[in-house]
Image (cartoon, rainbow, N blue to C red; front, top):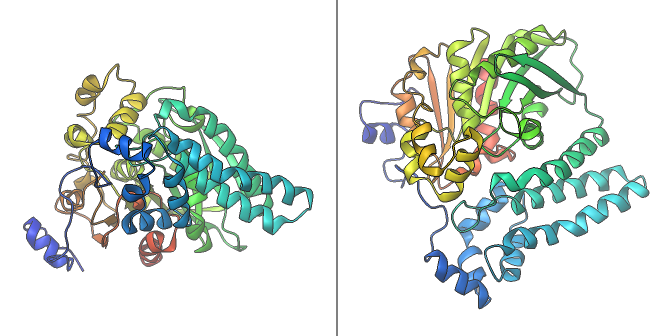
Length: 401
């Protein structure tokens, strides 16, 4: 059903959300006291009262982590800086178990332990961006460590993955073309997949298992200033040129159907997915998870962690300068140029890219647009690694590709 975009209230009614709370501005994900009071609570061993809540457990579960792990990590913390250590301690036994299972040639157990370790390490270097935040510049080591685990996982699962390097006007980019697990006699439909801010191609490829099980090849690439391009050219508003070049690589591959290409992304990746769809005639469908609309407009309300990460990836000298530099990062003159079907999967409680962003996109769209609200869900939608999050997008893609 086409959403009613005559007004925001009408839009919510058309999505059956008239009695559902939705976010309309960016803000804090975790409700709680000021940071100094939170620090005091941690010193007193009371951090679990703030962190280990039903809502936060739901968020953790949607990220693929056992909810009870949150309780363990919270009890171990005596300061906010202990977040990373607490989750790394939870990951360590699983990292050791990986080596033990490898030594026993137990492939299934090794795969299970790698999956668990990666999910816990992703928690260690994640956070809500307000109480808990790991600056992106401190992620170099985890990119290296996790990268080896991701590669080992792909090898153990014996799935076909091609590492492809390609050129574009802003430099060189590397991507992972990951084929579906089941053989296909013909050419595969494919997704160009773009990760979120502070992410990388390996972590996003890890999240897209459900898409490949649905028969789609995925081509995850590093956005500028991320992953293997961490120290390369900084992110620019028009980096959809990277996506355009990646689609050319896909279209030229002998096992990919050039007439069944889609682009998808999470958060910042959804932003560039739409910008790519607006200019590339190759795109047959555009799918966004937790998409922003106007990054510059939302920058002042964003939590400190988001501000710091974005400042780093665009190369601004300060957060104040980044506010000015972020103003060209928007979709205001983009959405109406998209000629393929669009779908947005978005949490109604998204505190990073508020739910109203879907309305701003929908009311500008000239091509068919579908909105899939996930009631009560926050920005974890940007990492569609679970069936609850990925499912609506996969079902939609089946209908349009």
